[in-house]
Image 1 (cartoon, rainbow, N blue to C red):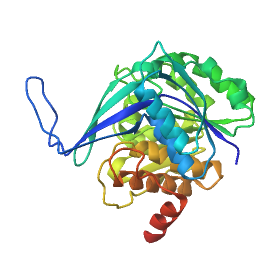
Image 2: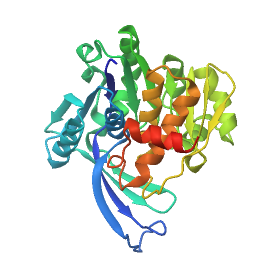
Image 3: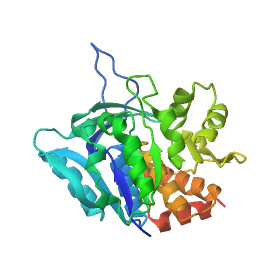
Length: 308
């Protein structure tokens, strides 16, 4: 298969686990565990795709610092082509502190270089002979967001398909030109909170119906309930979550993206894409962080087979 180009943010995740409730100013809570892992939606998805055997080219920006070298080394260690990663001494590599509880997590991010990537950083030579362009963290990547229509046009002109995971919008506006962009992409991969916020719908089924006319394939991640998707405005399909011994949900949605895209790029039916996404998302929760327990093809096949 031709490579997938991931244009996105790079940062380190510092994960504090075993947290029983949210912190409050003026108070203090205790965590029962700590680790640091490769972070960012784009990076986790890229490493997940590579773990499934997909060739991946990564384009991003990091600072000339320890965190940046750590990120580049982690990508390279999974076989990701990092020649498109720009080291900019004027920037600092970002950091996300993830507060992980039993059923969910909260994130605090220092953006650093995250907002600095531009469409012009993704050269035509990077797109040449590739199959697909994936972009995550639409709302965080402010410079790229402004120029994304141009990048998508270049990618499609070069024969690539395009997917987008919007991520969270810290501003709470949930727009930024996203609705105008959706008809130009092939796969939209929000989670339930994001889909409801973008559409203003009260439930995920309504959100899916509103998004379906805007994009050929939409898959909404619904956490412990699994996922729901629609393709070419056909009937929606639901796939339940897979049961695993979960340790940490950080990056599970990005693992879902990797599994879904792996199947979609192989032109498998929507149900198979949803199952691979759900399996990869579930399997990634077996360890702290989004990448240490990412699934291989054999892992996914075993999990799906055991639930059949």
